[in-house]
Image 1: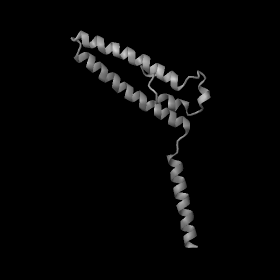
Image 2: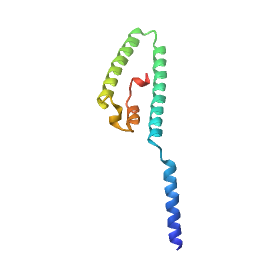
Image 3: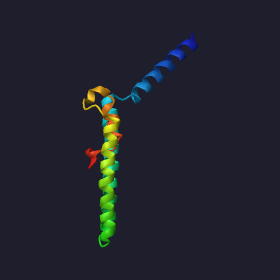
Image 4: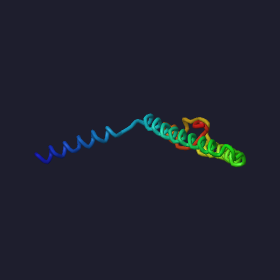
Length: 108
C-alpha cells in the first residue's frame, strides 16, 4: 500500500513539474523572436562602434558598407529559400519561431 501511494505521489509531482515547464507555441514563438531581436540590437551597436572608430578610414567604411549590402541581399534570398511559400499558414503554428531563427529584414 505504501509503495502505491509513493508511486502515485511521484507521478503527480513529476506530472505537475513537467506542466510548469511547458510553454504554448505562441510563447515559444515570442521568446525566439525576442532573443533574436536582442542579439540583432547588440550587433547593430557593435557595427556603429566599428563605423565610429574607423570613420576617418573612408576605404574601410565603404568596403564595410558594400559588404553589408551584399550580406543583406544574401540573407534575404536565404530566407526566401527557407520559406518560399508566401502563405505562412503553409508552415503551421511553428512558423513564427522558425522564421525568427532565420536572420531577415525584420531586424534591420
